[in-house]
Length: 167
Image (cartoon, rainbow, N blue to C red; front, side, top):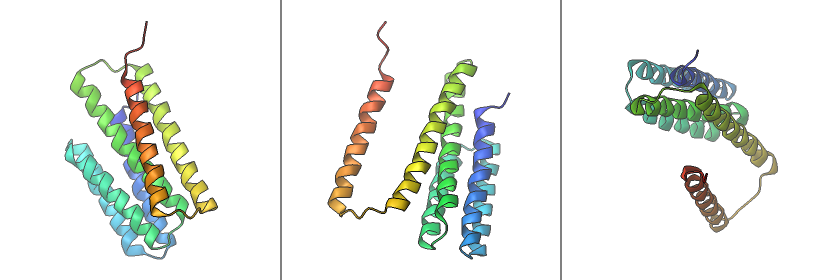
């Protein structure tokens, strides 16, 4: 049976490959090589068990996605790279959380987590593609207001999710 940390390592490889493809499509082979090298370092740190490498890897992967956007790379590989990097970060943290609590990993709990993660990532990529197609022009105040509403909604949903079920 595959573990969440194995899934995180696969997601790191896919994130590096998607980022490299985005840079290759924008005629930036040196940045594509940088994406592969950074992905390899993230993978090596994950295999070695270094906890700090996950946050650093996520930050660097998102930085590469921003650079790809600034270099006019195709959107889909950049979105996929961001989604895979977020998946790797989440799965690594999930694996560490279950190991720290010393809870016997239940297949049902892992499957539920993977379903929620997949749904969030698919929705994020779909919304990113939709935003690229629609291209709404918003002022900074509108963007700030909508972002604040989104953060508050996530905060409230997290509170509801953490609340114990009434039995």
